Image 1 (cartoon, rainbow, N blue to C red):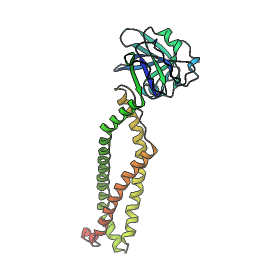
Image 2: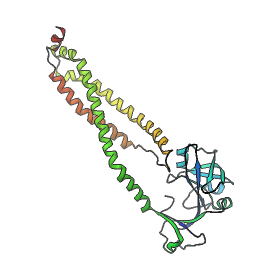
Image 3: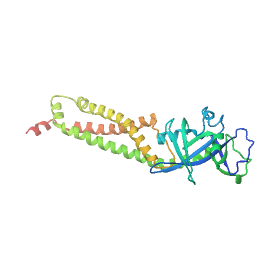
Image 4: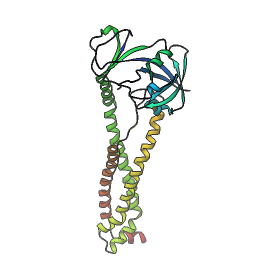
Length: 295
C-alpha cells in the first residue's frame, strides 16, 4: 500500500486535521490492447510526497509520468516509451511519456505531480493518504476507504479459495513423479536383469550391485530435478504473464529459494521410496536367471 489508509472523497473541498494526512488526486483511465482493456489508476501527488517517495516527481515535465512496477512487468513498458491511455467514459486520449518506474506493485498505476494532474484533467477525485485513520470526515463525504484490513481480507480470501487446492496439486504432482520414477527404474532393472544375475554369480553383494545400478540413477535423478526446477520457474513466469495479460490487475509470480528446495525435496523423498523398492527387486533376482535366459 502507498499508505496505511487511503481515503477518497466525494467533495474535494473537505479538509482534515490529521497530522500525517497528505492530499492526492486520483482518476481512472483505460489501457487498451488488441484483445483486452483494463483500468489504470492515475495519481497526482505532492512533489515532496511522504508516501510516493520519488525525487523524479517534481522533475517531471508536462505529459511525463512514472509508471508502477506492475505496468512495467505486465506490459513490458520501458523508460522512454510512450503509453496511450483512454478516458473510461468518453473519447479522450492521453499520450504520456514514461520518465521512470516507481517500485510499487499494489496496482496498475501511474504517478505525476498534483499540479500537472490538475492541468490535464477536469474531472477527478480527491483523497488523503494517512498513516492514522481519519475519523473527522462524515461517512457520506467518503467515496471509499482502503485500509490494511481490506488488503489482508482479499489476500485471505485468495488463500482460502486457492491455497487448499494448491496443496492437493502438490500431492498429485509428487505422486505422478513417484510413478514415473518407479516405471523408469523398473525398466532399467528389468533390462539389466541378466547382468545383475551375472554379478551375483561373480560374488558381488547386493550393496555393491546397488552402487553399480542405483547410485548412477540417483545422481541423474537429482541433476534432472535440479535442472527441471529452474526450467519450470522460467516456464511458469512465461505462462503466468500470458495468463495475467487476459485478466484485470497484476500478481507477480515469485518462487522463493525455500520453494525451490521444497520442490526438490518432495521429488527426492518420493524417489527414496522408489529406491527402496528397487533394492528389494535387485535382491529377488536369482543367480540362475542368466542361465535360464541363455538356455
